[in-house]
Length: 362
Ligand code: AMP
Ligand code: MG
Image (cartoon, rainbow, N blue to C red; front, side, top):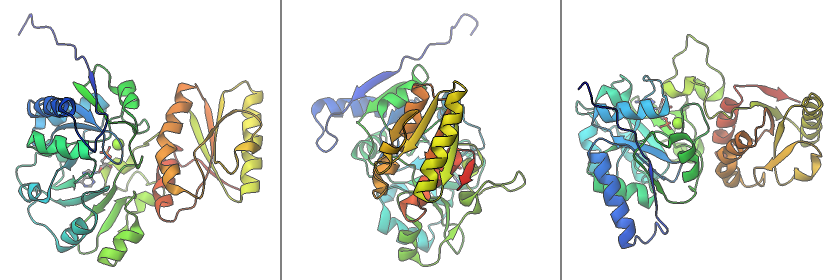
């Protein structure tokens, strides 16, 4: 209509204090949020991995709004979130045996599986693919919101495309204020890295993105499991990674990030030297260190990501540290590297991508 002005979105922020025991106020918040999802709107909410930006996964127009709010390339498909196993059958054309086994072992939890999609899942949600990625989150707020909505919720990480994923509600507000209808603040998330993605459409399950359900855990449940090459290093332009999202420079801070890997002594010395050079040029420099090394960097802005021995803590702090350095105006960041076993594989995958594979082995 000619005179109709476009309505400005005003993002509301609703707090849920204790997700383990919803109060009447919390239930009201969840009902309001579910009503927005049903009406085709956007609500950000906590999950155990990172904050998600939710919309009705079966409503192509609603899914489009997610891409617009995030500035996300339209060929990067969305994960559909469900609250129980019964909600999966309508979304898939068949449920492979390995899918059943993995669901039994790790759902609800931080694992996404790729299935052949059914006709009701729109291509607008799957980025044009004939498969659909599905996850059943364990976070009680996420699970209750999905249940109350009565529809699967498409929910990519609630950040502007390319920025570090949000692990707190204020991160979401930074990126999404005025672009989405509401944010449910459930406090900081538990894990801090996105879900493990496993493709179960072929005989051998294939990990497309590492996460808190580790490759070692998956192998324990279903035997042989492959790892998509896009996880391990940069993919050349002619290779199409199976998870289309893996081809983008992701999770990245505004600063130029360099990863320095090797023996601790050499790493500390190299970072101090490189940081010193940039500082001498008058640049703002951030250093990502660990509790073990935090006393060994005399110059630059320092943030410890946690104790090296506790991978869970490193995962939990990673994105918040990257965002903090953005807020503090860092132009260059130097980070120590981490071992790639267990959760370390996911940590290094995100750090490698954040650094655009700018890695120094010393
Ligand atoms: P995000 O929701 O921001 O964590 O990103 C979702 C990730 O899941 C992206 O890397 C997508 O490429 C991947 N993904 C979603 N759906 C599919 C699918 N059907 N097949 C393969 N990867 C998928
Ligand atoms: Mg994301």
